[in-house]
Length: 172
Image (cartoon, rainbow, N blue to C red):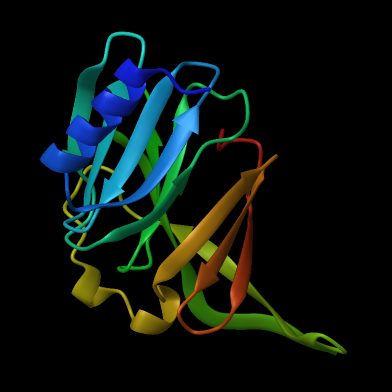
């Protein structure tokens, strides 16, 4: 059962931050993360009931964010701009940003549909990302994401599902 104080606290969060579009709770750290309609991500510590950080990671709506179970370091964030971002859970800084290259490496036809293999690309970390310079085909809107061991699955407004596989030099 949820305590009354937690319910009241949640009401305050929703009143103050009414543009919230997605939530994610990390029980390992007691942190609550949120993504907003104006591209901000937020982090609250539910033990102290304080906002720890907020960061504008995108010029547009954040539709989904998630962490790997038991992980207290990285948060995966996706939204309407189609860029998959990784944030540091402790301070909200962007660790990395990725898109998929336009070039098709190979394609397979199966009974469940077409499978395409494309290579991902990490975007420059310490510069402003002008999303207009990245083709829309490389960054369809991320409508939902799920995080696993060295993989992230994203759904898109183009009716496709992407499985992002990462090499060991990127920690999720």
